[in-house]
Image: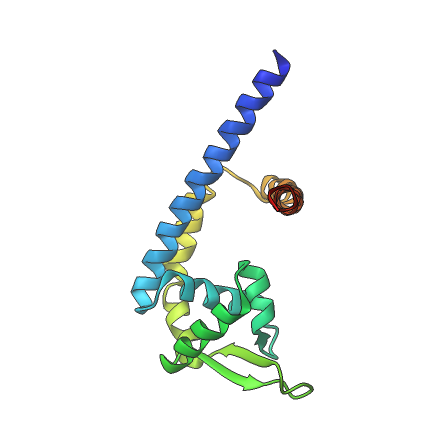
Length: 159
């Protein structure tokens, strides 16, 4: 009986994650549309915003954050560069790496959205305090690590 209840709780959790993911994709698509870019390009801009500490961000770091292939990041960042949202330059210490930074245009456009993003975050996280979010993030980080392991184990089984 216990295993059946646990299995049901796991299933409910997975469906809740699927629902949250779907809603977040819709939200990201809406933000992207306001800038005239695609949802994956929006995520790239958000990854650069999150990762850049003033020196630029390597494509591999963006790819790892978004869990996509580096070649995809290269393709999309070239498009973002043409649109004036990203600057790309070779790393000073290793020209094989291209470092990306938001342009002034991108920073200004994202800043224009900041009040709306704060209001949206207030709605999304309305009943959660900092302590709860910190605890939830720790649990989700553990689950993400376990999910990566499970995916690798499944890939081995399928091979």
